[in-house]
Image (cartoon, rainbow, N blue to C red; front, side, top):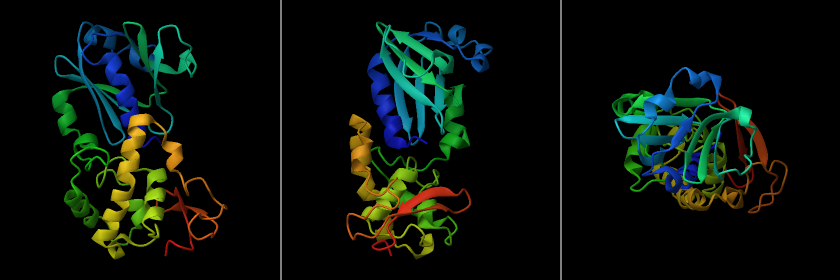
Length: 257
């Protein structure tokens, strides 16, 4: 699932194409055709493009906003007019054109039109924790929310709870715990505030940089490296599903104790 840096990077690519413009809009996917988005949004200017955690928002004149969450399958693409898309046109849900550029959302799965007021009260959005990438970042609020979680839950799994901190996924959970030398399996109640902040402060600048240039792979040290030697201690990197959702965790059993 794309993490916050990937979503912010998409917003940063989309913003100069669409913000301040009135796009031509098409909804080729059958699931959206009956919603009449081209008619409802026709002639409306896009006033802002932003992201919060793993959610992306396109704000239109008239108190309307398109909300997107990519989950495991979705993708945003930006193209020059006439440029071949990286996914099949049959997989396009939303196409927006302005001048000689196109913005395409592929494969849904969460793509919805709502009012601004609804977006402020929808608990999927309003209930999110502080965005790991944005400034200012409210560390105290993250710690308060983390301490409200089940203290027996592994810290690696608590970091994935979007109501605690928005934007961290499996990749940055693994890299943050490794950099701070914290066992992702340790119960959250036995991880000190200073240790939690070490994880967050370790990943934040890397995620912010990735949000600017899209070069996330250069920060991968343990994620996806099962069986390879840890660059810090030489122990082979381990992999196992974690907690109730069985989400993949990579860590070094040697130096993350």
